[in-house]
Image (cartoon, helix red, strand yellow):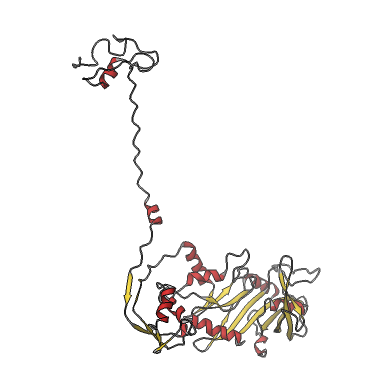
Length: 421
């Protein structure tokens, strides 16, 4: 079939064979583009009908393909999006009453806790200008509050409540772990059964510790109080650890520990049998730095850095003459006090890497070479009244030793009658 037109492809001599106007270069294709003369078919088709086509016209470059940008991934948009700003909330003049938890707080810290959206400079300004009154009188930012006082708060423009943030998977695991080791919990106090080998606080090379874990228990709301430690335990000591959940409880329990009203009882497995079977150890302890560790050594009265330490002990049960289960009641709370005291009287605690210095000692078969020291019981006045009395079970490695030695963990503890100082 012939195709009509000025440059129709169906004309003789314009097909794939020889051209009436020349020949194609070998290997350059049917159009004749390249070093040979261009074939009339393709070139004539591209030329304008009003303008003659040159035989040496350059070939038009092929337009580059247009690359359309891919739509952004949905998860990236969500991940990088800035959180929406909290709406501003205007308040009128109000009068609030301080709670027992806020007793002892500085006035400016009170405003920071109650109104997290306020800047520090704004808090200082409204207090100094006299817009804030405490029981009707002018105050200074550093003044301390007492429970039940009336605080006049001027009109404020603050950020609205922040949207609740969902805990990460790691935080959820931490909460579940803390719940699994909780011995007692109420509105003010938390008692944890600290595992052996878990540090209470961070230090050189220590990233996992209980103090850091308590952040996941921060209370919701503008105050957002965070549980805080009341006392400490050595990393390898297991047992009762007291935590305050509110400022009021923290202040009350700190006062209890300073006055030595808290009763703490420890259990330990020691080498040999102490003589006498009940006694009082009173020494001075001072820290000694070594190349790779620090220990507490027995010091002299009046020596620089020395602190007085008193411990009562009683033998609960023995395993022949090789081992003894003892109960300990520290009157003071010095670092490594119980461990240093038992080593001092010649009965170091089994598995103690710092203070067990008996040469040629053979650990009885089946007993693990871990510190056999348990914070067995803690009894303190509860901040709201009454007595908080909590007991921790034997940790797994100590329970194994008790089973091997035939010791009965329900046996009466004679240290309960130790005198108070």
